[in-house]
Length: 138
Image (cartoon, rainbow, N blue to C red; front, side, top):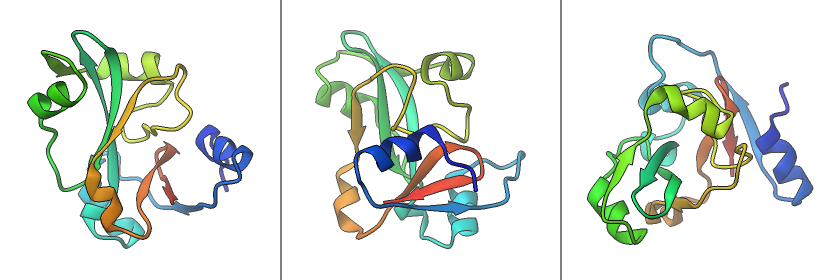
């Protein structure tokens, strides 16, 4: 099984996790599809989005797979006036990860990470392990 940078970081911090592998559908990288493949509710599978604030710069936002990012809310919460999604072509150079495999753990540089408070509703959540086809269960 693939050991991603995110998994190695968790190992180094002695944080328990499980890696769940699934078959990737290149035509459907949606959180809904991933949730079905890992056998979890979509709300329990968190997606990591890369955004840029006008004051803070690059940030990572983890939200449930069935949620839409509220750019105004994250702007207010992060002390920005405006936040926008980072263009897809910039995601890999900034994070080291490709679309469908962005993890909030182990990016090329350290960025602020904001996690939706619904994370506390679950005993375990799923998020990308840093490669398509692999999810971390934490």
